[in-house]
Length: 119
Image (cartoon, rainbow, N blue to C red; front, side, top):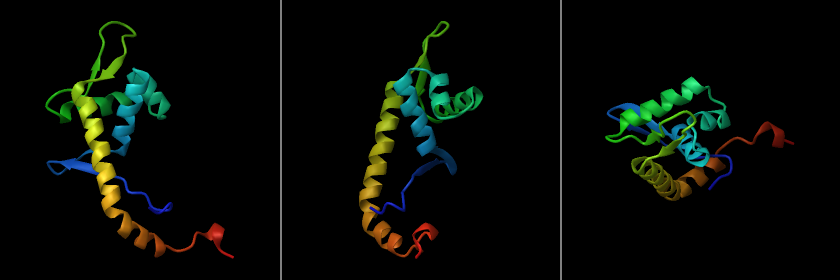
């Protein structure tokens, strides 16, 4: 696939933006760090913004995708549903990338040459 074009997915539910690469990166970082605040910091987000995104994800699905451990400094983790959401999103993304590769390559060849590469 073209290096200049990148396919990104946003999945809508009931006509509203539901989950995209930003929320998926947040889930991946949360799984890596075990902390909502650490995941947000790693992605350059405020604590409040991070919590709002986690809350919106938890409200979107029939079961929470992120759970917290009780007690101070208890941390957070992806639930089984959260792990499944992450896996399925990445699977959909890979399928879409494979299916769109020929058209993406053709489209990339139609792009103007970047100014830095102009003679």
